[in-house]
Every structure is written in structure tokens, then in C-alpha cells.
Image (tube, rainbow, N blue to C red; front, side):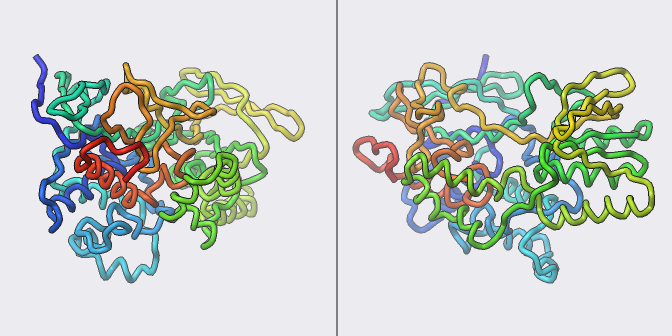
Length: 436
């Protein structure tokens, strides 16, 4: 028989990555703040067995592309004990970090910061727990309630909540017809796959598909890790394009930009996403581009090219054998086809947002003309079938802008969702969608 929690929580968070961790920090700070008369009761459910964030891409020396001050709390509360500076002080590296004279920590260090915060935040988190569905439980005590059903260590678990916050992250995207295997990976699997290869015969060749930051990082890391292997980068462009992190372009990630973006007509939103696509997608840090070019040039000078760039090309098909994966690459320039025998074919082809409706049987998620979920300014889903609050983190780029899947506005967004939850709790009648 499964566990049933008779308490009704103010909120239950589905997923415990940086987005909902930031929300947990906001809840903890509210509960210990001077204005909290009634604490917010919260519980978070996470399918991983412990906290982890993009573990498969924790490449040594790889740096963040976001300023360390855009952490879990500082933009919302600069004096937060859960900020990155507090982490540095606790770890005894405050002065050492300042001496580096950079805004950008390594990805390994920022991951350590996130683990540090997850271990310290005083909220209930159930790891190794997979949520199967969220349904309407009707009115209880005069207020609408949701029922969250999950499995924890193969045992059913049922929770009730006035509000649910869905933050299940993004899922790896592979081209149609591509199935992951021992020799065909998504870039999100890079580090554990490489660790396994290091224990066996030395690989001879890798093929990496993609033109974004992850693709370039995979190419660089495979090339320096396996010093006898050839690494072939395949992309439809002429070469890697630099990410635009200039001062004015970065304003698209400002908290105030969310208000302006949300209020803009749909055609203006589409234009902004298209014009500023290269701030985050299919673009590479200029320093990494330069490093790869210099390495490639040095190999040409030496007369032994292990780093190859197959420009304006696509993978036409691949065939796996026991010894290798045969990759057919077609040039868009002259139509010629090259067949490459590789130890691994790596697709660095990005991620896609999960549809929240998959967790909401019996409820109807309102959608726009493009079929995307309609979301209030306070990140509350427009849903038919319940008056309880269902909030969405991470899949709102179409409505809230380019920062939706990034760390840039995680702290501010968490505060806005908490404000909405508090307003709904205090209101004698349901707060309209989009209200705060």
C-alpha cells in the first residue's frame, strides 16, 4: 500500500533543478523573514536520486556563460545567504575567486554551488520520486486542491496541494529516426560515455553533429582527451558563429524585459526571438571558437590533422556495426558523400521543452494559435478543470522571452511565483490568471 499525505501543502514542486531550487530558496527566506505570519508549506519531488544539473556536460575547465551574480537568489535578494558569494565564503574561496577577475565560474564550480544550496535549503525534497499525474481533487476546506500522484522507490506516493509548480526541465532532442545507443549519443551523455571509453581500447574517430556551444565543447574535449583520435565536426554552417553577449543584446535577459516581452504582440515576440537567437542558440563562445581554430591551424602546420570541420554538411544516415558506426555525410556544396567509420556519433542537437499537459490528465491546457500553452504573466498555466494554481517554469520562452530556460531570471521568476501563491492564499476569491 502506498503513502498518502493528509496535509494540504501551499505548493508542491515537480522537479528540483535550478528553477525549483530557486523557488525553494525564496520560500525558505519568506518563512524566516520578518513579514511571514503564516509560513508557506512546500514539498518538492525529484526523479534523480540526488541533486544534479547537466552532469553529463560537466567538462573540466568549461565556463558558465552567465554572470555568477545571476544565481539562485541574488537578483531577488542581494543579501541572501543562498547567493554565490555566500557559497564562496563558506567554501573559503572568496578572495581566491575575486583574484580570478572574471564574472564566469567554471561549470563544475557552479554545479558545486547548486549542490551546496540544495543541501542547505530547509525544505522537504523527495528524491528518487517520479510524478505520474496531477489531477483536480475538488474543493477541500472551501478552496480548490490538486492531487499529485508519484512513485517513490517503487511505492506510490500521493500529495495534495493548493498550487503545483512544474519545473521538469528540458529533454534532449535528437533528429527523427535517431535512436541513442552505445555508439550514438546525445551530448548530454558526454562525460559518462567518455569515462567508459577511457577503460577500453583507444578510439580512432568521433563524429560530432551540431554548431552550438555544446557541440564545440564536445569537439574540444574529445580532441584533447583522446590524443590519437580524429574528431570530425559536422554542421550545416560554414563555421561556428560567435554568441552575442554584448551589453545591449544582453538586455534581452533583464528582468524588465520579461514584462515588455509578455506585453508585446505575438509578431514582435517572434521577431525578438529570431533577431536575438544567437544570444543563446546555435552560437559559441568566441574564445572557444578561437581556441579550436588555433588548434586546427597548428595541426595543418604540423601536417597531421586530427581536427576536421565538415562545413555545410549533414549526416545523411548511419549504420551501426559491432566495431563502429558508419556515418554518411553529404556536402551541401557539391553533393559528395563521405563515409566515416567512427567509434561514436555524438548529436549536440539541443533540447526541447516538455509539454506540461502530459502530467495533467483530465485537465485542459489552453493553447495559442501555434499550439503552445497559454501562461499568465505570473507563470500560471491557463487550465480548464480546476481553480487551483498550476505554474510552469522553463517552457515559457514563447510568452516570457529568451531567459525562460536559462539561469538569468531564475531568482526573479521564483519570487514572482511565490508572490502569486501568497496573493492567492490571501485573496477571499480566486486571483485572476496573470495576477500577482
